[in-house]
Amino acid sequence: MELRQLTYFCAVAEEANLTRAAGRLRLSSPSLSQQIKALEREAGAALFTRTPAGMTLTRAGEALLPEARAVLAAAGRALAAVRAAARERRPVRAVVAPGTPAAVLRRVAAAVRDAGAEPEFDTVPTTGQLVRLRSGEADLGVVTLPADVAGLGVTVVHDEPLGVLLAADHPLAARAAVGWPDLDGQTLLWFRRELAPDYHDMVLDACRAGGWEPRLRPAAARRGIVAAELTSGERVVALRPASALDAGLAWRPLAHGAPRLRLALAVPPGRPELDAVARAV
Image (cartoon, rainbow, N blue to C red; front, side, top):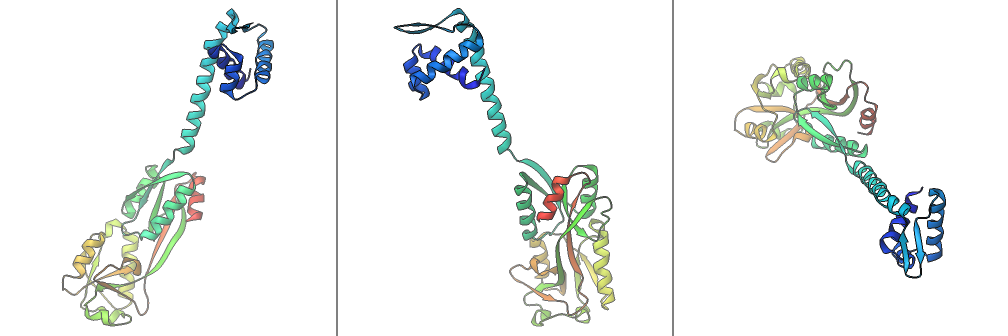
């Protein structure tokens, strides 16, 4: 039996008239009659008694009617479930480093959605990201390099030089570029080492290699707090990429030896669908 034959059968049973049922189904009466006869042949029994007044169910037809309705209802539920599943986007838990440029997040979100999923972002320091990725609590991470990414699939998605971020009225803002010796006496607004130890040490090593041993002031990753610290009137600077520039601030490139902000999309092993996301970012 075909679903459409059961649909036709139910329509005739409900209308008790072949012509009215044919109009409801937008079929010709002869075509509908042929479909009912084909169903009766397959069932091996007459399903209707045909009279000048219309069509009434036989005992066999009365037995088939509730079963036919149940089959059609189940088929409708199955189709609705398939359509709902096709519309539903599974979540992808993404842990991102504090201060990740918005442009990178937009690219990651677009790649995840193109793969039929929905990103759920959480800002987590690099050390916490690696723990979550390896434990299965996160599906992918935007990780600041260098970091211990052994065992993870890694694709670099952002590479940008650091420069000097400072108040727009800071004396060094008048320069086209800032050399390491120019930073002597400045306090560096910098994050706590435990958040991203390898990146923390790499940048400070670059400062020392350039001849600057900065005094450090712990800083939050939130841009509003950084801007408030830099515009406090003190001799305070930050080392950030140009994408961190906000109103009231200036960004100047380092004349030489600038360390770089490199971000990678890190994916746990055995997730080929996320490897495709990484390639698309």
